[in-house]
Length: 528
Image (cartoon, rainbow, N blue to C red; front, side, top):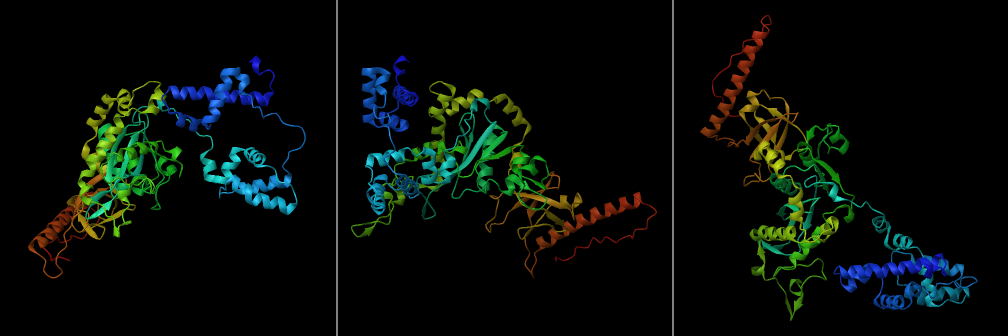
C-alpha cells in the first residue's frame, strides 16, 4: 500500500477499483468465460483493459492512477444554465444520444444565451457525473429503477427438496400442426426450489387453472405434497378453485385462508400448501423464469418449425406471408410436429434440462458436474415419500385436485341443478341431504360430446365427501321412454322409503304428538 501513499482518497479509490477489475477479469477467464462476455460483465472495453494491464505490469498499482483525475483550480467550464439544460435534455425516457443533443439542441441553446459552448468531452464528462441511479430512473422509468433496487439473496441450501416449489407458464418457440392450423404450444410446469429440478409439466393450447391443477397432480403423485408454492401473479393461479371461496362468494384472501374462514376450501388449502405470490412483473422474483432460457435453446435444435424468440430471431423460412418472386411463402406443414407428437418432444426437453450440468447449482454447492437430478436425489427423503404414498390413494388425491365451483348448490328432490343439468345419486336422499347446501367439484376433462360434465363430486359444507352424481338424461317432451319412467319411479321409491323411515322414527321419539299418517303410494307417477 506504500505505492498509494502519494495519492489522495479519490485517486486511491480509482486505483483500487481498476485493480479489482483486472483481478476479476483473470478469474472469469480462468473459469472458462469468453473474453467479450467477461468484458461486457465488467463494463470495460478491450483497449482500456489492455492499457491497464500494461500499466500494471510496468509500474504496479501506481500505473493504474487516473492521469486526468487531478482537478484543476477554478470554476467548472460549463455554466449553471448549460448544466440545467443538460439535465433536462438528457434525462428523458426518449433516451437521446448525447452526441445528438450536443450537436443540435445544446449548440442552439448556447447561441440563444450568447454563451460559449464547451467541447464535447467536457459535455460528456458532465453527463457521466450524473449518478447512475438518477439516469436509470429518468431515462428508463420507475419500473426499471425498482428492478435495479437491492434484492434478497436467497440461500436454497436452507430448504430441502419439495419444501418450496415454483410454477409458471411458458410458450414454446416452435410451431406444430393441429386441426389444420399452425399453433405454438404452451407448457405449465412445476420446479423444485432446492434442486431446480423440473417435477412435472403439461402441454396445452392455452394455459389455465386446469393445466395448473393437472401438472400439480402429476408432481404430487411422483414426489408427494410440497409445503409451499411460489407462484406467478396471474389470475389463473389465483382462481377460486385453487384459493378457495369466502362467505361472500369471492376469492378467499390469504388471511381468510390462514384463519380457516373460507366457505369453500381451495386445492391449496385441502392439500395444506401455502401459496406465495411473486412480485408482479418482476422476473427476479420468480426463480423459475431463468430456466425458460434453457427450454427456448432446446427449441433451436428442432429441424423445422422453430419460430424464434422474436421477429428478428425467426428463421427466414418461418417468415410466412412475405412475397418471393411474386408468390407468398407458406410453411411446409408436413415437416412440422403434429399435436400428438408434442408431449414426447416436451418430455425430451425437460429430461435434458434435468440432466444438464447446472452452473448456478455448482456455484451454490461449490463443486462441479452437478445436475438438477443429482441435487434432488441427494436431498429427497424417498422413505418418507413411500410412507405418504401408502396413506393417500390416487382417486382421493385426484378428487382434491378437481375444479370447484365458486358457490354452493342446494339439493333438490331431483338432485343438484348444475350447469343447466340435473345430477342425481340416491345417497343424496338416503343421507337426507335434500334442502341442504353442498359444494360441487368436477373434472373439466370428463365431458360428453355436447360439452356437458358427465359426473360431479359432492361435499357437504364442512368439506366432507358425500357422493358422486351422474348427469340425468333428458326425456322427450311428449314421448318419454320406458327407461325414463323406470328411472323416475326408482327415484320416487327411494324418496318415499326415506320419508316413511323418518316418519316412523319421529312418531317413536315423540309419541304424544299427533302427526298425520300420510299415505305413501307405491304407484309410479308420470314424469314431470
